[in-house]
Image 1 (cartoon, one colour):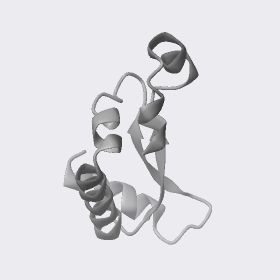
Image 2 (cartoon, rainbow, N blue to C red; image 1 turned 180 degrees about the vertical axis):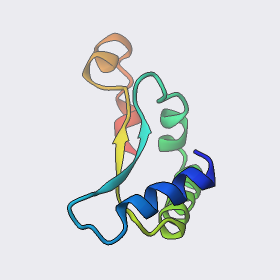
Image 3 (cartoon, rainbow, N blue to C red; image 1 turned 45 degrees about the vertical axis):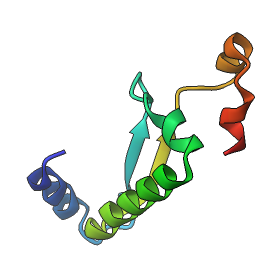
Amino acid sequence: MPENELRRIGKIRGDDDKFSTFVTVGGAGRSEGFRTMAKDGALRRRFVKSLGDFVARNNFIRGVDFDWEVGFFYLLMFGDIDVWRC
């Protein structure tokens, strides 16, 4: 999202505690790469640092929603349980 749009959202929210802004990561077919990142400690650290820096720069963000589109049916089809041990 362009920085000017983020600033606009921050201004709309202002100090209103009834309005919460969350960052959504993944979902709707945008989960490619999560598995690779989740299995690699260095990539996980880089992802978490980058996400933390983003939230800190945009202090109106109240949380992060992880919508990782892999789950039970993936395990049934591929049996890749290692992805859950990260």
